Length: 201
Image 1 (cartoon, helix red, strand yellow):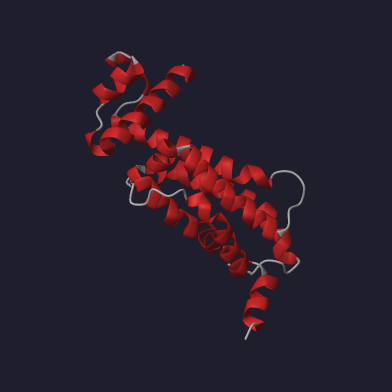
Image 2 (cartoon, helix red, strand yellow; image 1 turned 45 degrees about the vertical axis):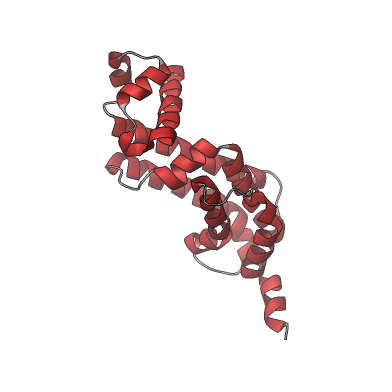
């Protein structure tokens, strides 16, 4: 059953990417997945339920991918920032359909069950991020700020570039700007780098 569910999610992702969330139909998803009407509705009550499940599934995979480079030994502030930004850029470029669905196609109009799952995934991300960040904050290596603001400062500029690429407005690979994005994030978030910047006449 799990393999069939994954097959339907993959079909939904392809159809939503091609037709959009509103215009993509259950019939098109069933046809792409090679399923009968009954088999589809045995798994999902509606297209909206499928879209919500897909959103949570993609969000979970995105979080796992960007946090994977921080697993293992203690990683310093600048090195951690670099790894997180590069992981975000790599995931977007290597998983265009998933990234486009997560950041461009899906709208935040989910029901309570999906919102609760989204919050739970975001809480897990914050917990993992803080596992790396808190020791650095205690040592005075990172600028103190709320976790949500830290993540926005860290990923926000890269995300803006990626949105341009995902929408087709910009055809250039966002990874070509990785070094500048990392440098700006380090200057904003690492205490010593920020102090040096402020001391520069």
